[in-house]
Image (cartoon, rainbow over all chains, first blue to last red; front, side, top):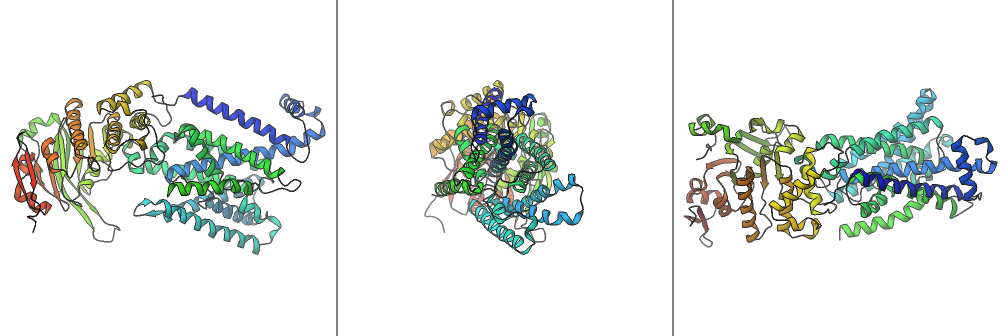
Length: 345
Length: 289
């Protein structure tokens, strides 16, 4: 018997953080403008040392354009993976994921409605920055609530009913997105591909970036604090309750926090699919089902995966760009089918 | 010798039981329950006021046909369901009013089935029993590991520790689940049809283990079962339920009466006294009307 220890947890996280760093450096290198790793390293060091003036234009362009996008990708990947891991534990369904369950589409509808309302409210710019993610969060929360009740039969969650409920919700909400974007004056909105597939091309404004950081930190910490309760919830709500878990409180808190993460991510990147499904699975194969290590591993894994997917999105069809959601769907959908067949075989 | 009272007569507790009250651990007092799918309808299932008491080290078996309210009674005792009226006391505390963590430290429940979403190793599963003792995010201490190892060896399953839960037999799995309950170091151990999917040898084995644990660790054990003979052999008291009504509480020899059992289980049978002095029930197949 060798239970998880803090030192092992920290070590694994450092290892994953190192991989994430390497992937991010590679992501800085690849793109329309070619730069050398040496030059990147030198200029990154200068930025850290506060000598920003010595950086060549080429590299400063890279750092100002590519770096924020890479950081956005890492943030979105981590958020969706944590949300996916949480939904899988709460719903006791390994196929649960914000995109498959329609939670991302709910967040997209919420974000679009918020964008629609915002000009009429004459808000200060700081508050306006919160407005879209807030809409996303509310949309996500409403969607997961609906799916939760659709998936309940005789007082317990039924796996296939839940998935069907999610698919139907997602399809209805996608239709709603199309309807909203088609009938409204489109100048203020990004395209349908953005909301339905997701992409990382638009970097959030500075106040919005702060909302994302703070929101992510709070939601991730809240979810992580319930990690060992989530472990017990895997064996069922009744079992968990008999082992001392306040199931109703944990369920509410984690649903809200996971909806917040989905809402934040979707409001700045659209509905990127399958990251929240694929990554928790991969990490569970490597690290096991203990959420104390699975949650941080999934966060790093999601960040790494989405940064890589974004490199592909920028380079595969260069000079034009694919939406990053197309890449994740191409990778994720076959995996989903594989898991579905294995589960219901 | 017993602190049991018949249903609906808790006001007439024998003085003998009152004197033994210091040793009294579990007291189910007129606990009742009604289940209605929605509050405006008449309840579709009711459990009428049920009372019994149990001391430390005692094994109580709850018997009855399907849908007689056995599992409901167990849920009420565990504190998971608040009773409609009456109360359940464990060492003087009302069980459904204990906070979750305290309840998890005092009451362990072995459920009918423990489906696993993602398989874990048996020792990890047993360590879950230490959850009520920790803060949410703490890591298991060496003490927890020792307790989990002890729990496994108490049920004779130390060799299963490193195995995956989905790769062991039903009987082995039941032992590991029991070990998890022991790792909670409870006062009260509740089991809901633990013998359900076990072969006869494993059933006897499990009941032997429970009997031994009750004596060694001074647990109070309440077990819901369909096995009349196992209950008759190993229980100190039996609680006989039928259609939500508590018919009889007492020592097996007092409850196992031919007429009563025939009426409750709707089949013909005989009751005789076995070599151990315990009642034996023989079914008479073919004699059924």
